[in-house]
Length: 88
Image 1: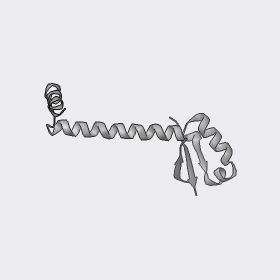
Image 2: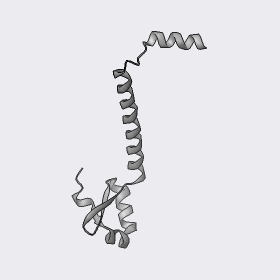
Image 3: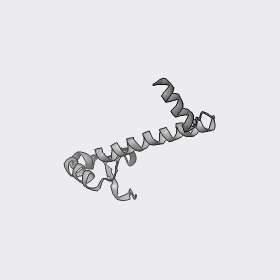
Image 4: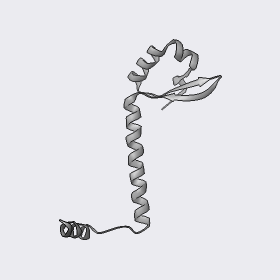
């Protein structure tokens, strides 16, 4: 993803907000907002934001699973099913 074409000043955003939002939804590319020549914020469309949130949640689950494997917190499928049936 190339962001060079997706950089806009805060002044441009103020003057062209509707156009920026329309382009944002269409392209689904993040837009970097600058203030005094420095990057200050990133704007995302809602669908892209939701995808990022879901990806982050899955990565957290995978990280937790890896840590549990490293700590030996495993149970065989046979034992897990037996424990489930015993509780039922």
